[in-house]
Length: 329
Ligand code: SF4
Ligand code: SF4
Ligand code: SF4
Image (cartoon, rainbow, N blue to C red; front, side, top):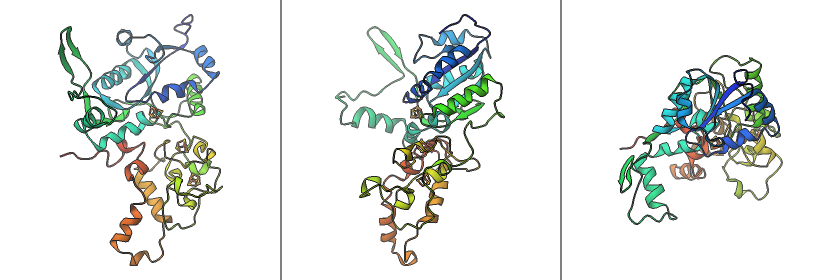
C-alpha cells in the first residue's frame, strides 16, 4: 500500500469482531475497483491483510483515521477494547455487515450463554477430542509462564450497542455495489445524515425477479420438499422467504440463484423487529381452510413445519431484536 501521499489520502482502517471473515472477503469483491480505493486511501490498519499491530493504532492521534469499517459483533473483551479504541481514533465509524449491524449468525448464540456455548463447542461436539474436558480460561499458568486470552461474554452485542456508530452497511456480506457507493460518498463528501443505513429504503421483494404473491397458502414447506422449484414467488410455493421483511440493496441475488431470501440485509426502515415483521407477513398469507375449527394438535402440527423458528425469522438479527437473547436460569 503506497504511503507516498500520506496526509492527502484518506486514512482508513478495517477490523473484525465476532466475524466469519466473509466481510473481509466481501471488501475484495469490489474487484479492480480496489485500485481506485487504494489510489484514494491508505489502509493504516487491517489485521487480516496487513502486518499492523494494536500498538500501531494506540499510537495514532485521536480522530486521525478518517473511516473505520468494523465487521463482526462484540463477543469478547478484545473486540470490545478494539471497538472503543477504533471509535476514539476514527472520525467515521461504519458498522459493516450483518454481524456488526445486528449480530448476524453468531448472535444466535444468544440462545445460550458462555457455559452453554463452551459445552457445545469444546465438550459435546462429536468431532472434538477433549478427554480432559478443557474449556478456555482467561488466565492459565503453564511452565513457560502465564497465558492470558480475552474474556468470552455471555451475550453477543451488535457494534452500536457498545460504541457510537456513524453509518451502517448491511448484508452478509455487504454487496460490492453498496461498498462502492459508500466509498464514493465518503470520497465526495456526500454521506447522508449520521445514523443512516447506506442501502435503499425498499424491501427485497421490490428488487426481486418475482412478484410478491398475494395468494393464500395453507402449509409451509422447506425448499427440499418441493418437487420442482417453479419460476414464481417462493411464498406462493409455500416456502418461507424473508423478502417482505428485509431491506433491499442486494438486487435479490438469492432469488437469482433460485433460493429464497433468508434476510441478511436486515430490518426494514421503520420496522421494530425483522422476525416479528415476517411472522406478521406470513400470518396474513397463511390461510388454512377451517382454521377456526382446528384442534390445538393440528395447529401445533402446522407450526412444527417451521423447524427452527428463531433461525428462520431471526437468522441475522436476534442480537438486535426486541427479544435479543434467551433468559438463562
Ligand atoms: S456478515 Fe456474514 S460475511 Fe460478514 S462476518 Fe458476518 S457471517 Fe461473515
Ligand atoms: S417473497 Fe421472496 S420470492 Fe416472493 S417476491 Fe418477495 S423476495 Fe421474491
Ligand atoms: S436475497 Fe435476502 S438473503 Fe439473499 S442477499 Fe438479498 S437480503 Fe441477503
